[in-house]
Image (cartoon, rainbow, N blue to C red; front, side):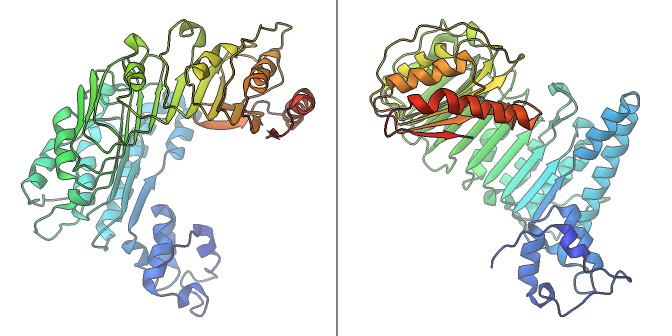
Length: 476
């Protein structure tokens, strides 16, 4: 079965005059039901439901969708921004609409299983009844990917005390090999049966959901197929332990959990670890597959516990990704030699025309580095000065690729590029990106296309003539 991604408005063009006047000889209608369901499963559920108007045959096809994506934050954000004084009332109104919409879909859903169940809306502990029922519904359908994204996107910071609390009682019932169906007022009663739906779970993403150590342990024991676990802003997480070759977990992301004290990973197949937050204790033992770590200032700088373990050889790390918002506060810290690191990715706070050469000490700590990437996140107005720093001579014997994001042609940009041109003995390619990186977005540094073009012109004018023979220059 192949999956075709089609937007909902493609279906709407078939509705002419009477809402059920639909051409049964068109290409889509000649496809078998299982293919149409596969197509509908690739749409947001709100768009998939529109197709019920096409004809009698289409009426309930969307109810068999195996991907239920309830992402709908735009309306709430727009209303709150437009009318801040009415924020509490609007929030309650939009929440109720969202909850009712999810419940209507669940009542009509007919497939025996679902691949993905995603909730993405500003919900909190006051919605616990509905959210708990949705989790139980998804698990009863042998869900493979479960995502609860309850972040309030209208606020810079959320209050973890208001987070929905993950219901341990659901895990208790499932771990007992049976799931007794509760009486739902809005969710259809499922047949009484032994339900081990959690054992099919491969991806679990929890954002602004309070989950404790006990629940994590139960999930890891019950979900032998779990490959990806994300926990964001949980105030109940204290000590995380991942242990055992029987676990299939390869991707662990834990971010901004204020009470977290330690992460321990032993005898595990974990390949990627992402941690952002306060400084904590890390303990690794027999983690041979771990080849990439993403972290940031505050997370690991204190005592350098993570870097010391990488340097000691207990980790065979290949890719290290660091986020540094305030470079001047962290440049005095020492970094041990990291001989296994082949790729270093930096996301750094850039302030006016502050020098970027200070970041080269991180590259010098990786003697076998093959690729260096720096993405500047602009924190202050872009300025040009006449200042130029003395460049340290330090040959990079294995460095082949350098990428500089946020290049604008200032002296600080140029001196960083010159450092790698002069010291990159094995350099083969330099990529200059004139776009600004801010958190997860990639947007033009200037709102005017003219200024973006000017940045590209400066990069070409500054670097093309001095690029060594055999080194490819790419300007984006």
